[in-house]
Image (tube, rainbow, N blue to C red; front, side, top):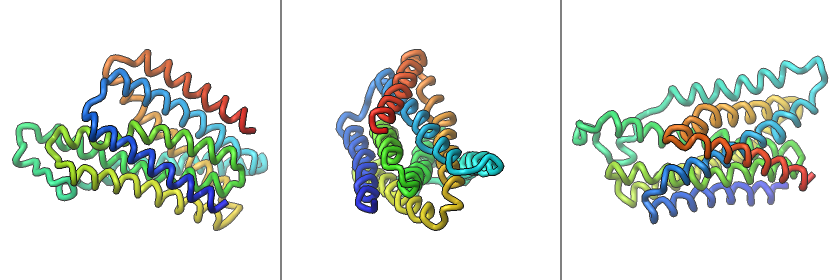
Length: 253
């Protein structure tokens, strides 16, 4: 199992770096294409969070322990909400001085905080993969890994493109991309370790990972796909993503 965890962690990191490499080369991708692909990934993650994380957690507890599932989902949502508020500035890391770009200071701050939000969300996403591996269901683990890996490609592009647009150099942008990918890889190992500490806590941990993913999908991914006028295409892509994940899960059952 540990070898599969290693492969999964490496796959998530490579997918994120692949997206960043594409972003460095292309620099700009059409909003329509990005929204469609991100919508598809949101659909896959939505299905994976329910079918591969929350539902298995429900099956692990008795009817009188239902509160563990609710508490876990709420804890996952609360974790991401808290991380959203605790977002330090990235000026030193990126080399951008907002005072120099005072006319566009608000835009720069939004971009930097958005990139940091993606970086922060990488930790629970990685933990979700590690936790589900500890759950013992290889099919669920692979399904979650696949959905997050696919989502990492456009996210990797989203990380580097706005940084380049506001004047961050290629070296610093690449460094940020590696940091973001490394956070998720660390999350995989952390989730695997935490999930293995106690079988009693495993349903709670799975539910928490599911809740964190649901919040990211609802708060970050779906609004982003609806922000450029291509919401119908993005919604169709989301539904297709849900169906694709259900098909993958059915085939690998």
